[in-house]
Image 1: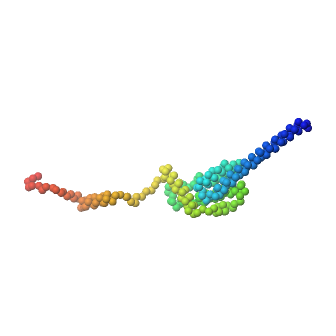
Image 2: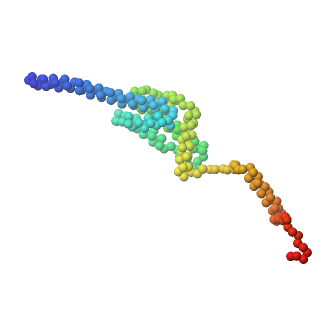
Image 3: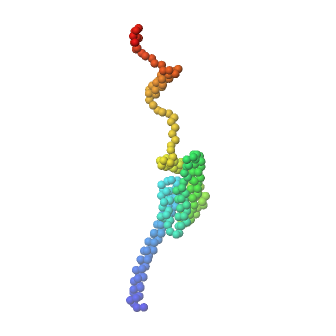
Length: 219
């Protein structure tokens, strides 16, 4: 090998070493950043799994497709699609359906929603090397009973409000009391009593006051 060729190879090796090292370092940093975002997303969903209507929970769900892209995370996206389909197809109250029946269907829908969320968290945890039992995922979160009832009621009220505002359902109204001025009410009652007394016996009683008696022979 000539000295010119060997010198050229030496220069290439000297330059390639630092360049490859820098590229490798950038790749490692990018990989770590991607993993950190996925882990943070997973932690957010775990921390808010008992508050499905919170802004942080919804935002994390909408970031799944972005952070868990690629063939490697197909199972995560598939589980998310099943959960999303359930969220977008909540029960609708039929016109002839009672409140109790609708509430029961709503509770059944909510229980299935929790199961699908557990499946999603389990799939994400497996990919991120977290080991959680599905029972722990479902029962391990502390959610006050009042919060659960509030979320359920909010869903019911929101759907009913949409039906009313959209003209699909009317509002039932019952008048129990009319507020008015007491003097006006009493005057109205006195007028009704006077009218009732005047019409007693089926004939209208008329009283003339200040009438002048007619003289004999006058007409």
